[in-house]
Amino acid sequence: MFLKYEYGFIGYGVSNKAAVSFLVSEGIKNLFVSSDSRLSEEDRLFFHNNEIEYEEKGNSEKILNCRQILVSPGVNPSNPIITKAYDIGIPVMTDIDLADRYIGKNVKKIGVTGTNGKTTTVELTTAVLSSGFRTMSAGNIGISPAELINDKNIQFLVYELSSYQLHYLKNIRFDFGALLNVTEDHLAWHGNMKNYFDDKMRLSTISDNFAYNADSVCLEKDFDFLKIGKNKMEKCACHIDLGNKEYMINLRGDLKRIDYSGLKLLGEHNIYNAAFASLIGVYYGITEGAIEKSLEEFLPEEHRMEIFENYKDVEFVNDSKSTNADSLVNAIKTFHKKHNNLILLCGGRGKGEDYTILSQEIIGKVKKTYICGENSRELRTLLEGKCDFENFENWNSLIDSVFDNLEKNTTVLFSPGGSSFDFFENYKQRGEYFKKYVNSKLKSLNL
Image (tube, rainbow, N blue to C red; front, side, top):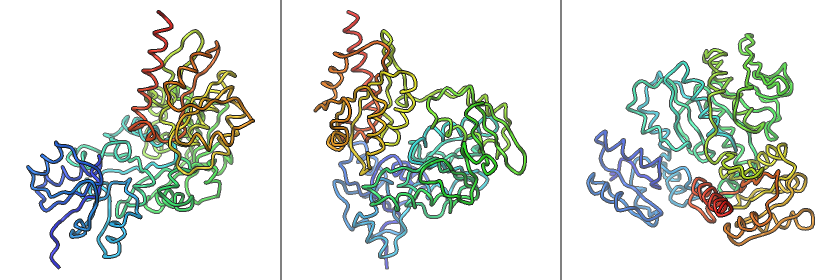
């Protein structure tokens, strides 16, 4: 049977754009792009100049006339085109698998996944390994590995891997895999918690070495992998000593102690994230001193528990990166310890999660909760009659109300606990909006 296209692409986001650009640079012809959304004029011009066929605002069966399909990770596997591709035996993969065909065989590949903390841990691990090796980050962090193929000096590639990407991965193998935690997330995409958990655990089957957080609720079983945790010290490859602020890492019978007291990241969950980076660093021979220096010099990223203003003993925190219930629980635990007067601003697009544990945290630790977003109804149902809260139709009105009731010695925590897509394009736009609106309110108070 004659196949018209060498590669077909479903979706045209960051990953597939990078893959198409790389293949064009290699002189590979007969590409077809199928985009469910409208393409930009720039994209159409690029396709025209490089003789790439395309369709937009929908996926047709035309793409099935290809040898292999690269799918944007967010495309649901229940998509009828994907289903038909599987039925007729067309390989479906991502840019990660494509790039792995071209990336040098001597490059060490580290895979990091988890419900929360992936980006921070990837950046920490990259920082630690960079003290001894040429190291780059790729994957869900926003950089396709296809963009890095021509960098022949790379020694380590640290991949951030979403559950979507893990679902589709075909042939790549990682030298070291890390599973940070597993809590409910993306259930609408995966269908149920078992499917989500299985896709996360899939990293253990495609990694030569694998470490996991033995204290994470869904991972408390005694898996036969390297363990990180603050309990069961004799069984942990990395024991977290919260009292002495150190990691005791025992690999190959050689105990290393890493002092993490210089870590600037807030929250116990970030102590775990740094533990993974430290364990991987020790595994690959980075010295204790170099690891401690990397942890101390690592600065928190914007939109992640970011304290950006302090006005008359009122602390404003932008945690827009909080896109699920568990990340919001971590934020509440972190900032409740600083001030008893914790004011919470939350709400977003839900992901099919159970908010019971979250509601218990809010009821027990938050002085007042301001809610806005598509998941407002679910939150209100759990909080009704149990704590002080208000619901708003838009964020401007919500923030105005917060300012009308400001008190000293208060933390104002913006931690949505849901995706941003009900009001914003992404969590970065949401966080930038919040900071800008708060700063405009503060400026008016100072006039």
